[in-house]
Each structure stands twice: as C-alpha cells, then as structure tokens.
Amino acid sequence: MKTSIRLLAMATSALVLGACSSIGNKSADEMVRYAVQHNLTRDNQYNFEGKMFVQEVDVPAAQAASAALADTAVAAVAKCIGGGDECTEGTASANAAAANAAAAVDAASAAADAATAAAAADAATAAAAAVAVAEDTTVAETEPVVSAEKKTEYSQWMRHWMRSVSVPYTGAVDLPAGKIELIPELRYDTRNAMVSIKLPMQININDLSLLADPAAVAPFVDMFASDSSMQPLGDKLVRVGLPEEWRKHIPMQSILAAVPKALDDGYAALDKQAYQKLDMDEDGRKVGARYRVGLDTTLKQSNQLAAAMMESLRSQLAETAKNNPQAGISAEDYKNTIEALAWFAKLYAKPGDTEMEQILGAMKTHTDFYLDGRGRIVAMRQNMTFPPLLSVLMDSEKNYQVTSWWRLNYTGKPTFTLHATPQNTQNLTQIFPYLGTLMGVEHKPATPSEQVQALQDLEYELEGVTVTVE
Image (cartoon, rainbow, N blue to C red):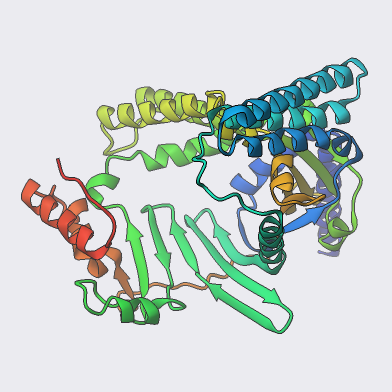
C-alpha cells in the first residue's frame, strides 16, 4: 500500500513538473492563450478580489521630448474663440505643430527609436485632432473666456477626485454552474472622510438574467418614487432578465460552446511582438506566480481582437447551424444571430476616423498576466494610459493611468453572496409594470395600444425624457 502511494506521489510530481516545463517552453503569446483557455475550460471555479483606481505617473523621457508639440496644437485651439484672424492664426499654429509632430515621427522611425517614434506619434495624433477642432470651432464672440486661474482650480479639483476615488471589488466565478458574481464598491477616501457604496450583482448565463441587491440605495429610491406607479424596492433583491419570448430565439448553448475558440482566435489575431516574457516582480511573488507575461495594446489592436472574436463566433455558429443546431432553435434564429455577429465584427474592424476616435487611439494599455506552474491565471494587472492630450487639458506634467489589479483565489467551490429565493426577490417588471408590457413578459407580444400606454407611463416616470411613438 505504501509503495502504491509513493508511486502515485511520484507520478503526480512528474505530471506537475512536466506541465511546468511545457508552459515555460511556450512563446509569450502561447502562454497567454494557454492560460486563458485553462481558466475557461478547466480551473473555472474561483473567488476573486481586486481594485481599480486612477493614478498620475511620470511621463517617459521619449514622450516628454514630444509633448511640447501637442501642447502647441492644443493651445492653438484657444485662439479660435471669437473667430476671425485669431482663429486663422490658431489653425496655422496647430497645423505647424502637426507638421512638426509628423516630422518627429519620421525622424524617430528612421533612427529605429521605437519609444520616441511611439511618443511622437501620440503627439501627432493630438496635434491632428487639435487642427480639426480649430477648423471646426465657431464660438460666439460674446462667450466668456475661462481664465487661467479658473482652469487651474478646475484641474486641481479633478485631480483631487482622481486621487480620492477608487473601486475595490470582490466576486466569484462558477462557469460550470453558469454563475458570475461581482460586488463593486465605489469608495471616496480622503483625510477625515471615507464614504463607500456597494452594489452586489450576479449574472446567470443560463437564463440571461441579472440579480442585484440595491439595499444601499433602496430607501432613497422608495422615498422619491412614493407618488409614482413604481412598486417599492423594499429589502428585496431585484432580478432583470430577458422574457422567455425573446430568450427562446437565442442559441445560447451554441454561443457558449464557441466562446473558448473565439477568445483564442482573438488573442491569436494580435501581433506576437505585442507579447513579452517579463521578470517576476514583487506582486507576482506575493500571489505565488511562476511566470509573468506582458501584453501591450492600443485601442486599434483591442478592436482588432474584438473583431476577430466576433468573426470566429459568426463562423462557428454558421457551422453549428448546418451540422448540429441547438434543440428548439430555428434556422431563422441562427440566421439573425449570425447577421448580428457579422455586424459587430464589421463595426470593430472599421477604422476610427473621427477626431475623438483619433484622440482615443493614442490610449495605451499594458496587461500583466501572472501564471502559476499549472498555467492558471492567478492574477492580472492592467494599466491603461490616457492620451497625452488629457494631461495637457488637466494642466499636468504627469500622465493619467487607470490601474486595475485582479487576484484569483482557487479555494475549491466558490462562495457567492447573493442567494435568490421567491420570497426575497422581485422582478424588475414587478417594480415597473409598464416595462413588462413593453417586453411582453406574459409570453405574448403586447398590442400597439398597450405599448403606447406603457411608453406614456415611462415618459411620466422619467421627467424630462421625451418618448416619440410612431
């Protein structure tokens, strides 16, 4: 018996060591793709915790060298106030800054300085956007000009909120059971003051419903809505879900089966050079990680990933509709779903050509994947850096970065906070009866007159919102 136990222990050790070796020998992109699949299909039950916050970070030297170009372009927009010669002068200044930025990109690229080229490209984007704003701005001469002092006060006020507000969160994932829970907490924490509010939410993937606990705001909502037709929230959980009449036309089982490959196709669509094996840091050591892999993306690359995912889902569902359709789902239902996925794929693949899209295109995201020896994701950190244009508008010499830290705890069966029963739960359509009429929750479409009445009730509840019924 002891010999058998020793042999089993040796075999288990060999399997673990073999897994560690095989993971470590993979390329950076393969490690991320393997870990994502592992967490989707194998170790897919866990609790998690994390925090999201905004911070100021030092401007890289390469970007600092090009930041003046963006400053010049943005400052030129101010000259458009009042129009006339000043606006023409402002446009010329912005165009000059954009030309200088473009020249900086060419020079940096020729020198094979990737960091400086990227920074100069950001400045060029900001400058080009400023040109467009300068050319389109038609501000009345009577509009007051905001003083430099007011701009400084506003910037300090905004920085205070950025430094004082954070979003800690906890939650649980049980993919085999089709449940995901998230408990975000909006926290304001500064000297002599701390205020927080939580909104626990739980998604049921199987029936496409959302369960929420609005206890933090329910007393205020009930007090202000006491004179309306809205039912009080009380101390109950609230469930929001698609009506059966809609849900039965969605091939949800087919979609869920296609998600793992779709995610893999999405990550595979990114340039392999975007992935990097990195040295382990202190945060990784604290969570027991063995490997750390970084992924750098821009907004364009993120859209590229999403487009590849949508196209993969579309292609897989087309095959499923032909060869193994989900029971109860018609060919027409599959056709509508496939067309919707194709539309989303084209939407994400469409290049951004508006001024705002060009500005957002300068956003950079760095994600660190922390993996253990089995290839599981044990933690993730994501830093999303705003475009340099925001730093200029905020009158700051720093860059602004949204940081999110996510740690996974594999403790066996995950612990959930929300437990719905018929006694402690009410549907949203019970609280807002007219929504039930609009969605046809009685398993039959609402008549035109019922829909008109429901919309009129909705307009009465939401004062200031105009609903047009054709």
